[in-house]
Image (cartoon, rainbow over all chains, first blue to last red; front, side, top):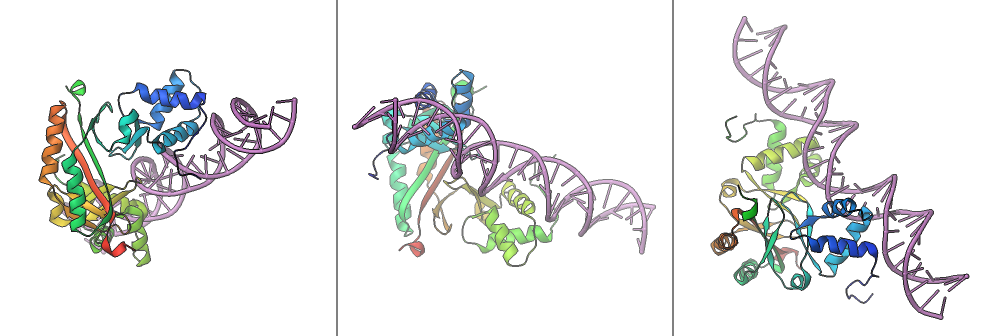
Length: 135
Length: 135
DNA sequence: CCTGGTATTGAAAACCATTCCCAATATCGG
DNA sequence: CCGATATTGGGAATGGTTTTCAATACCAGG
């Protein structure tokens, strides 16, 4: 138990999951990824998709957000995933822009401080309809 | 179909659900409310609890947020619920403070604008451990 | 006070995303 | 090649939420 990132062997399935995510510009649910793989003939079990998605998230290779409907979605962000940031997500196609707002970070911390809350964390996601999905 | 708020008869169950929520300072899940009612002898079916919670949410009488774990929680906010605001929520006891941040609102809109996203909405919740729950 | 019509209820079943279980399989070091 | 270890994936289990539908409550009019 080192506490370091989970190391796992490079497997066909792991690569398939990673690739599927990387090919997509937006956030995708585990089910989406599973369906996509299945469509392109890649045979990967659903549990395996979930496992790799989680592993990627744990390793900080993908961003995770919960849609307002409660589905968990993942997005491959490469190195960017390791910097704290938020997203502007298209609610139609899932496409997302990385955004950051130092002001928001400061605001969250100061508000929490003022109320005596510790161990602060925050969720900030902006949803909209991207230009391609309008009309 | 008027589009107006859902009107429903005042029923024992509806009142029970509303009261249970009103008595709590924090966000509570449907299951919590159900358990609480059951404990105090009120006999209300689980589906009925869900129904009233949703109705209250639709009417704008309660705020709804999804915990990072994906549970849907409700909080009675009275009139305050009708003004746009966010929450600082204790992740231990569910207690919540209403907070607002005009700067955040403006930021969200402007960021979306810059990227050509329309119909903008946003989720901003701050989680922490309240002073009572520390240590 | 009946009666018919509409709304509400709640138990059980359906849903659905996610997790768990575990036997079969793949891979690695020696 | 062998034994040890890791990964896989199908199916069952979970758990929150929604749906279904028959029983019940409530209303207005006769």
